[in-house]
Image (cartoon, rainbow, N blue to C red; front, side, top):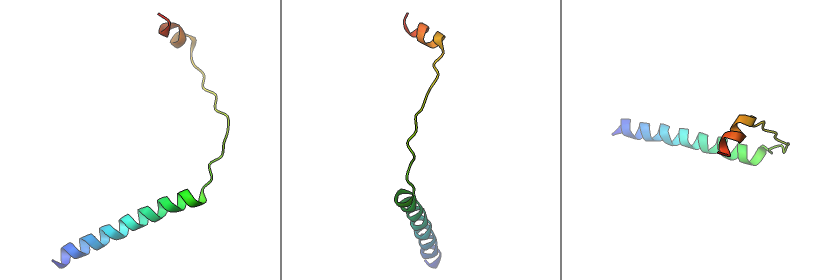
Length: 50
């Protein structure tokens, strides 16, 4: 039984660390807006018209 308790404790600590890291990313990181340009080859446009 102590081994199961130790496993669950370690799993709970790891889950808490991952949750804390995700929360920190959401709270502290602000995404930058920028323009995105995607080049589409002409053959892709022409093959879709058929």
